[in-house]
Length: 409
Ligand SMILES: [Zn+2]
Image (cartoon, rainbow, N blue to C red; front, side, top):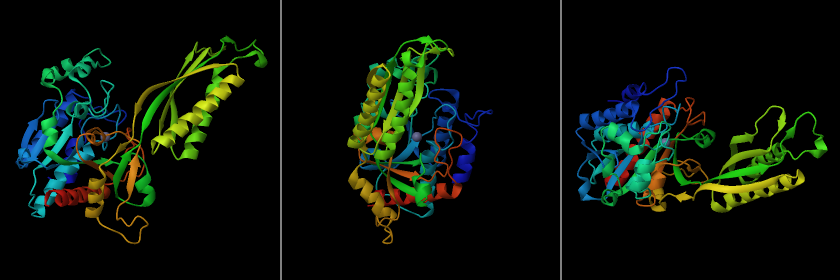
């Protein structure tokens, strides 16, 4: 089955008719349909199909017990109203790459696996990469059992309803120990490849990432009768902080976003008493991130003081930088070729990303790498996410080259 027909088969699953976006949430009907599709693809190719203790799906050519396996794949679930490519492109490309290798008559010397990690987006239970986190031992069974969706359904009940055993979940070090390299192909979630004019790129690292809550507290008062000079308006400090975030991020080549805000009392004719804004910031390295967030906080404190407003800043979450395995990354670059006319000397660019992935989770346990496919809109987690079919096919060929290069030596 060609890339095109596999893609067409998966395309309608879980797509909303109004938005055109996808709702393939973990352990729902749409997820089950995606999983049935994966199993059918595995079996139609004569691959050994299995589901691990955490509900991740695997398809094997050769016996993984032989060790040093080469594995590729991604996830099939989506964010609310997500695009078609984030996740599925990596899984469909994995099957298509195997077809390409078979068409080339390539004999793989190492076991080869294709994986669909469950619940990567965390759209239902609020935690991303649950399948790979459990497998890598970065999430305990007890923690996972406490995850609850918006309707009050716990993860164990949801897994059970989908026909899986929630008591079996937990770390899977033996499974990971058999894998010599995991390569995840993913649609790019930015425009770096579009700007450089490349179809495919190699990931260098996942940027460090944090979320901070800024509480600006002033004094609620009448919007009509309070003189400007008498106001302690936290909205002003907040607004200046948003501008500072943009400025600091631009200076550091990083990103900083205030995308969520609550206001009290939230009245159209009242000066607010509280403005609470959440900052999401990511940068290439820890120093850069510290500089950006430090700069924003300093500016926020200055604005708050100028307006007689109190400020509390709380870091709510933090994920350090993930550096992909250097040797594997260099091996991918070698396999995909050299270009002496480019500054880097490489045929494909090596780029960082601000988004998290299963490959990032697994990089703590096994050598991992990522390939990105050009996304001309740069948009992701939205129906506007896109990759041209030519670029997808270029991604498949690059992935086939990589698997061949890694599994034939
Ligand atoms: Zn993804």
